[in-house]
Length: 499
Figure 1 (cartoon, rainbow, N blue to C red):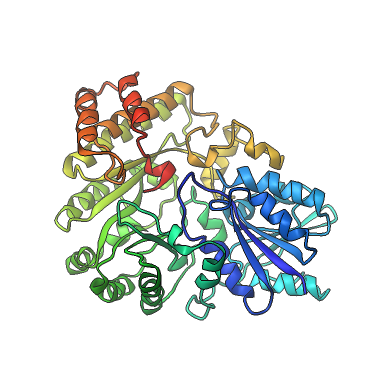
Figure 2 (cartoon, rainbow, N blue to C red):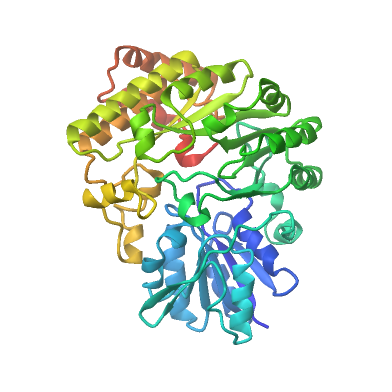
């Protein structure tokens, strides 16, 4: 029986997190097929490691998990090199990038299958079909090429999470010691990355999650989440948690139940949420969150302009007024709101685009006024629109196009695309992008992020002293002195490097 290599491409410099997505695929074949994980974040030469496995003649299948952005830098050249040297191998890609760009993936000639969404069922079924020469046309969540035609099988209903097999942490530990995955962050000395749910019940038209999960959400029970975390805490010493769910706080009841369970463990934690969802939480629920160790919550504020929220199809009941009100509300619970804003959305004229940017800058300053501890994360709008949406049509009409050749995704112009720093969007002029980046620099100087644990209090005060006058009088152009301090002290930007 052929063995499987599961590859987690490098996603960050010097930051290791348990590769949950690829580990869940390992769990799906555990006990049926032999597998190994190669982690591009931990392995000094992952291509050489994969080739050493393939040279044994025992491995036939390779599964890659691929996010757009940094992971492409290893995924594309490695997949191509392996297919050229080992043409008998079967290459399967999963993750957000192949699910949203299957045509360019399969057109490369060296990737055989795409898992379109969760692979917990699709991947083992595909391996069974290939191993025993059975048909795979009826396997759900699959995209492949038949001749010149791209075949996309139906999506599987989102399945319950509790019945899924446990993640094989102990076997991962045999390959890469788990203690090195528990990094020092703002939250704690040994921070665990964990997924407790998949999907999101909303349909924001700018979000890559929507076409994959189609406004569906399934979560592990609070008891099972606690059981997993408690196991890792007791065995490897984890003292903090990053919940990498797309939307951890969908259910107030589940959140409260988890808080009651985790509270005695004295762990700090962070997760992602929607403002309009959490604004409905009772005061006692928010108070319990903080008592249970929740220090900071990431919210996609996106815009303070209600018209832009409609354009982005934000859904729900979120408004600009609510964004400000909720930031102020969280002050009394000592929970830091981390608000992300998207600047530079498409508009009919350049003047309207610039007016939107100016509006958001003023709005962000109002948020800071009511709650100075609010963390602000700025993104320049990068199209990931839901196909068929109004926003999708606007983006196309403006002349935006994705690369049509897979290798072009790692060209200098595109490699930082998903970092939303160089979006190559026709409606944004270089001057507009400079305005956004310069305001961001001044904002980060006046309010250095609390998540940069390397920045001493003395350095914080120095940067604030230099930036505060600019911030107060709205002078953002040419902030070279702040950039110099940021570069000299290696200021950490959460939107690029996380905690």
